[in-house]
Image (cartoon, rainbow, N blue to C red; front, side, top):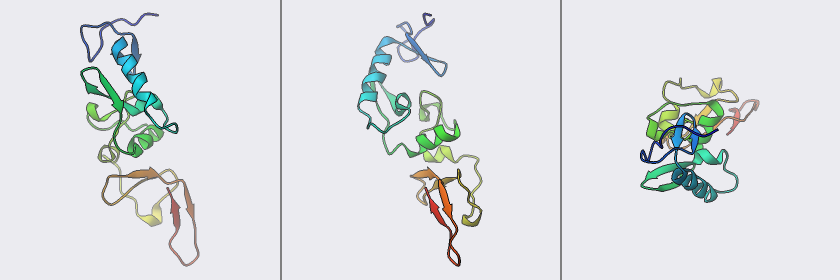
Length: 140
C-alpha cells in the first residue's frame, strides 16, 4: 500500500515510509539506511539509533546509547520530540528518569534503572547477589 502524505523533513516530497506515525521521503529512508550501516553490529534496534541532523543528513546517535536502550526496554517516551528516536523512545538519561522515584540500594530490584552520580550514564539492574554481612552485589 502506498504511503499518503508528505515527508516531515522535506515537505515538498512525497512520503515513502511511515515510522511511528511519522512520514519520510525516499531521501530520508535512504539516509536512515546509510546511517544504520555505520552502527556497530551489536546495536539493536538499528533504525532507532539514527537521527536526522538536517539537510539530507542522517547519522548514528552520539554517545553510548545507554539511555536509549533502556528506554526501549522500558518503553519510556518522556522528553522533547527532538530527544526521541523514530519509535518515540527517549535518547537522554535526564529524560529517562523524569518522574521516577529514587530507590535506595536496600530496595533495588532486577529491572530497576541504575543512573550514575553524574547522570550521564545508565543501565538496568540485571542481577542482585546477597552477600552475608556485606552490601549486596548489584550487576548492571
